[in-house]
Image 1 (spheres, rainbow, N blue to C red):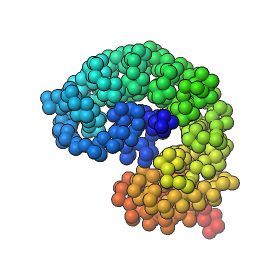
Image 2 (cartoon, one colour; image 1 turned 90 degrees about the vertical axis):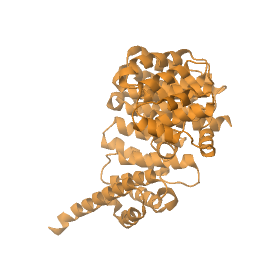
Image 3 (tube, rainbow, N blue to C red; image 1 turned 120 degrees about the horizontal axis):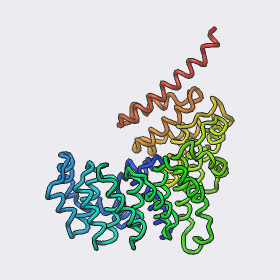
Length: 408
């Protein structure tokens, strides 16, 4: 059970951090901000929210649509009922705007003797609900939580908020670097992800991120931590290297070695990071080839679906040559995904990712046009329909341009 917990939790960190890596149908869209109430398992909160009556939903919406925090809402935050207080925090994030009053109430919760799970939710939420005007002062509190709080859950939440706050002074960045060496792998992962949001401090963070790729093979973690936890930390470091863009170019050789890693999620993360760092067409061609095995879902596994989703998103940002040796296979695989109604009709984000990948193929994806037109009509998502239309327009334009020389 420990291994499953570790996998779930690093995805939870990605949800809160809202980095590009997390924008999959298994993350932002369908689990939006469902940060586990105990932080031990993503699924515990899903069960909690589905089983409970969201008594405070209307209250939270009313409070934050008006842009202020009324007494009833603040009383919910202060409630001794752990469920009520945690739901108030979750709903504030779902419906809210940054509020000085709410931010400092969250700080008070973290500094109190409340349960660790409630304190951790507050620690992770404060980074998003804190106005820019208060971010420097709140960041000082979060720095102290990450450095010295007794609870690894709170330290993880603090690392998440430090990534969200619009602050990047030396002490904050140094504290996140210290967090990458925390005994808890989830704190390490959150720290790595948050370092990626401080890319303007590349000089301070690159060495730490490069070391993070090796985290899963470090002997000192081999006995106390599971493989899944270590691989999660490596994915966090790889993801943040990609967020650093061209300033992380020295890491490219290391990332290219991971394109075909035996762990699929590490392979896809490395592909995406390398694509963001380099604009060399030969590198992008290597990435497109490496992504081919990930463009299918053989089992009804949420993690396999998410890996496929990330591979599709990576294809969409590539600038590979018009043709590649694996292009026909890639197009066929993506077409099968498009025709899989279970995957794309009920997951608009997945449909959008498929459309983005097909758009990347240009005229090579002419065979996808009938299915694209069919899905465009069937989908209930306006965003998905727009993405599909963009793909159709790109393919038709590419095909038309390819035929011009033959007509003359």
